[in-house]
Image (cartoon, rainbow, N blue to C red):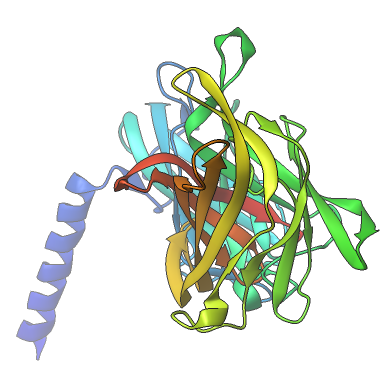
Length: 357
């Protein structure tokens, strides 16, 4: 029995010696004296991207799996304290002793309980340096307060990324924008419309909430947040989504009203009749967005149809888009392509964050 105990102590001693040789940070008091110094940024002053771990749900206490990995460049040894601010009922923190200088990955352990769904932005602090990270808090209906595929909560917003970005005057490029739900609605043809106003481009998308399983849009028959016709004579009121149809059935495909429009092709402006053909192709999909899994996704195919004047009624398919809508969120992705090259994406819009939906 004593021999077994002696061997066990010897094994533990070797383990401690081994760890002391390999660990660069330690929680053991007295491992180093003084206060560590360093920065959260790289040599160019840029914050490195934090790695988010775990799933975050409303009113659920954070567990050991909820943590954030941040990169720290230590310039001196000693005790460190790295922490975040407290936002949405949560905070992240770690302390210990650093035993060598240089870049280290530090695990900030999550504490608290998320209060509201959506994107939560944090700042992290170490010494005189500050960086930040964002994480998504989910819940029922992908973390939204509604089960509709078009949220209408005033001041709720969705942020999108663009690839490639939009070219702006002066040579700059816009690669992100935010669509915010206006607190002011209006009625048209007996339907209540809500405005999604974008910044910084100041465009407006007018849509309804759910009406008997249908969602309506009032505007030009093109794509969400992407306008391609060079001239449009009038707007159209049309259904852009149905959440109560079965793919492959007749009711899963419909067409918008015709509007007069013009489009440049080869430097020449062609006028004609324009409309959309819309098809629900898949339902109940899941997808990975914002570091989590979105459920209850509907995939819609939008075909941009155009009949030039004097073309003997020959209708062209100018462009096609696959649009993905998530329950409680709305549009989460839009991929635009030519009908002849569906695997070559011309423009992609993807959700980058949301709040207050």
